[in-house]
Image (cartoon, rainbow, N blue to C red):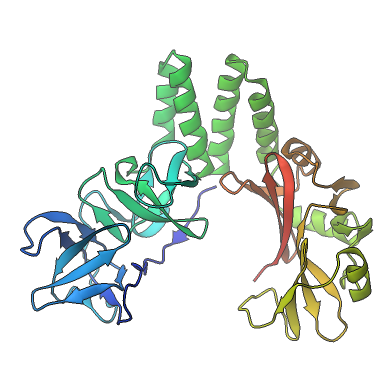
Length: 389
């Protein structure tokens, strides 16, 4: 799925003191020394600096886990943001069809994201080949790390593994040219991961290659799972898919199920929720959430999150963890904590609209609503609902 992302580049270095932020209005060289002679990297247009000391000659800028750097005082760094649109230095890309703002792409498969910029740091997860990486600061030394946003958390990846976006056809040619199993595996993984950041057409092409690789090497389980993903993508509804799901919903063949009862259109009664789920742990009504209407609040339970109407006390499910007797119904089939991804792909074929391999989530849409199905260890873990807004 090709993604068009408007990048927000106002990324902030952590505070060490309370002071006004500095805005970088044009690419600005950072130095390792106060004489401003040894280059350390570059702060890019749109980034912000929150932790610093000021002298007549330079700003001493503090960053997490690494030594401070020094930037010469100039009109490029001010207390307000007013970009001069000066191009970033090579190899940084300022704008292309995927992203607007200084960025590069990951160029390997399964790149580990670290908690802090060291090889021994805890691994938070991985990012896919061809993932766009928004940059606020880029080091001169490729052995250093760059900071990224990983699933809402701060993470770090080596600068040596980002660059121009890989080319799918070139990777396929390289895959076809190699003979060893290890080399085939490397390119097959890169092809598939890049495809997840591309169009549905490319995903289908990559899955066919990955299935060939898996079958050739007798990786039966991997081949079967990839075949189900291939069938899913070939069956993605182009038009009218939401109407099919809407019809299922109105016929009570699609929706959240608690203790055998499918969620009514107006929501569950308060008494039913208390008898089956328990009592609310806490409630929130001051959140900026477009899902909430007037006189509604979010109520958090042990295994569920509800949108509660303050007048009639009806409870509409926002999130439901697949534990106890919690389920989700799709076209006569009941999904629960034992439902595998393979089962889900067969049940949801023709209804599933997208897949996120990093989060292990699938999306099904109906008119005005979306449902996200999250898996952990190949089992259904949680289902969330979202109002389109």
